[in-house]
Image (spheres, rainbow, N blue to C red):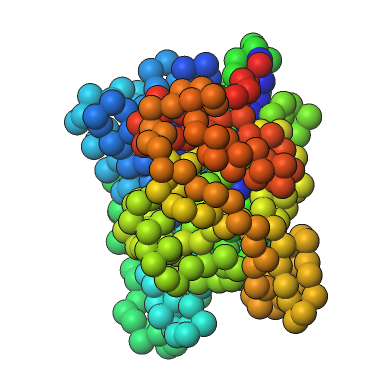
Length: 428
């Protein structure tokens, strides 16, 4: 059975939770391999809507083992808040596994995230202020706290002391904030230890054994390709690898075990936070997409920036991730438009670029070159086969498929769990 990587093809919020849910009943494990609670999945099950921030969306599917792998940074307060909220709604959360090697977000990470972002002023990145970047920075600087450290108080205290030694100088002398005491951090982290202990596993061993036993493992990426720390619109990116390569390092499963890479792409484009966005709309069309698509952050509540579909970005995503299948979401949001522009290339200083420019400065100044497609008025939320879609909707899908570097295997036509058109099987 396959190992499948599921990633976002744009700047996040593409509907990865819906795609994961589509595959859920045929998947044995769903693995979150990067990020933290700085992004969310909204999954609709019947009349119930679930907003997940840290947990893998597979936790909503009976029989699936959800895994938080080593590449994730974990805010324990958020983890247990989400688990308690799901339990209160009757969701079985007992199968959750958490990697012993995952890093922990602490109070000082959240504090530093907020004060440094404010300190940047007009050069702000647009972080969520949830401590994600500082936690990853500590990981790279080798002063991070890992899940396993919570079970050895002496080691935990030594690591917190080492981390706070420099950070308190920064907080007090640069940011004019109070120093953070070691005891308050250690006591806070230890308060979660016994509740956490049953969940903590050697997830690398667990996942590799699952694949050896012909189980199907789905690796679910947080954020998206254009927010990847290496391949995104740096520095306006997240602090981890949100591309398919991140699934390998973030889980401990070798690249030759990955069978399929599914990228989720919206029928238009959105992003949250600062950074270049060539097709961004500032008129009534942008407001239409925001309103009709309910484009507000699952985690932050921030209104998303909106724009038309960007084919060069889709091709870029297909190329660097090895995309085998696209899942196109929110096609229904475009219903009612007379015309639908699609960005097919960019113009930078009078020069046409058919691909994403390698220069961040060029990309920042890129102007979209559009091809216009006729819209449709018919309600498509009840469509369940490709032939059920109006001809103009079919033509739109086929056109962007031809521009995007891989086949479109499924199409989201509404917010419901079953509101999807499947053109090609995503597993077989």
